[in-house]
Length: 235
Image (cartoon, rainbow, N blue to C red; front, side, top):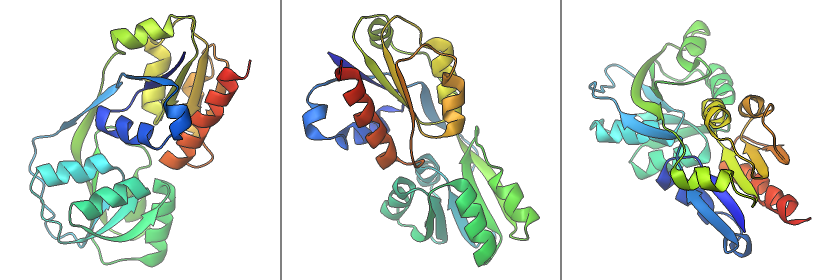
């Protein structure tokens, strides 16, 4: 049996699993064991004098929607999934970039009407607002959700201590660090990291395979999981 341990919140994990090739998906035992929970923060969210909104994750879109923020401004997004969530919530998406670094560079080059408002999680990388402001594109940030760490489920612990291979995709450096700290066992591990930064906390673990996605997006992570599955069943 080949186990896929999903570490993202359930809805995002189910969307990811649905993208895996059907013949492989039928052979996977999927365990949903999120290592973070998304909690919307209670502070009011207002666009104020902002001329555009930056979303670096779909969670920011959902938090803005939950807070009742009207989608009346252009949105600048990191990733196709974030952009899709923004469009579904009624935002007009003006720009999509694969990474936060690419979005910062593109906004500095484009110099849209400012100020901009970055709706972000409590735990974020990249200093998007500070870098844009320093480059002359005034941007302020507001934390609208928290990413709270949670321990692996009992089902995940059993699988990790079993004899069958376990594939685990890790989608952030923080989640990868938590996985490395809490997910131990004797199962052969096959790990997919969304970035080099996410791979670093995993490198001291005992594993059979570790792949860094070629791009920091869901499609590349699906490819990494499919490649790991082939490795895990090849011998």
